[in-house]
Image (cartoon, rainbow, N blue to C red):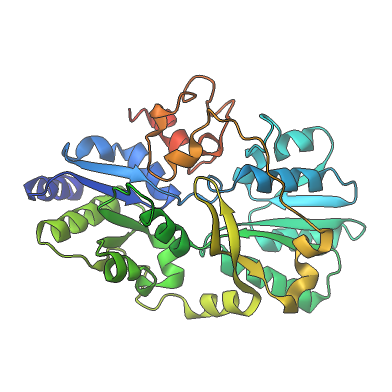
Length: 354
């Protein structure tokens, strides 16, 4: 018998009422869809996608500011691949389109790649889009330190980095919140450690399990969560011991603290949340694109039919969006949940979970 079969048998053997588990990681969402895990679970257990995809939580106003910046002839925008097709307020307007029209937009795999681009183009301003959660924040911070040590004058970062805890607290505080447990992201856990999720149990009596990314990892985490619920417990447990420690990565956390500081941030579906983002400290202000270019966010006119904000907050399933699979597909996306390789709508569309 396979490990996954044994875990399914154990899950089925547990006696619980209806349980809604939120996975707070786009990689988990994609693994769940690809492996068909939702179909393996008993009917009383539902897996719900949460605000764990950095592309998906980036609101239109941020992308509009990025697109305005890309129109400058003296600027090169560098970005991770998934950000290239995230739309602003106008459908179809994204960095990929701007590049096709002649803007200097370059895809990079790391912030250090962006630094090399800045060095290779001394007559241009290189702006790196610092997207992600605590997982990518240390690398972005390290790039800023490297740029400072090299004396680069044409490199800056537009930090759209976010922290998970403030968002989950805001989500839990919403009226009608209906999540019973959290499947926590293993990659964020490698940085902030198991202790970084303890507030779920201590402050809200909600079980949490930090999980890896293989199907068996996720099934193990689901079993651990259901076991807690069946026993009336609410703890945060480590289901990814091969990568996550209690303290996390101390050196990475120190790099973040050296360069970045909490700042208010806009989230798609959740709005503005105090201290939920990571801004660049005054010591490194020369590398802050917001200050260098005077970037301001202007409220854009979002497509009212697009329900990405509700999907990533667990308020509805992807196929409940009126645009899903019709006017919104991976080939012609309306919202970022259909754009991202970790988006809930893209996962549902690709693997037909509904």
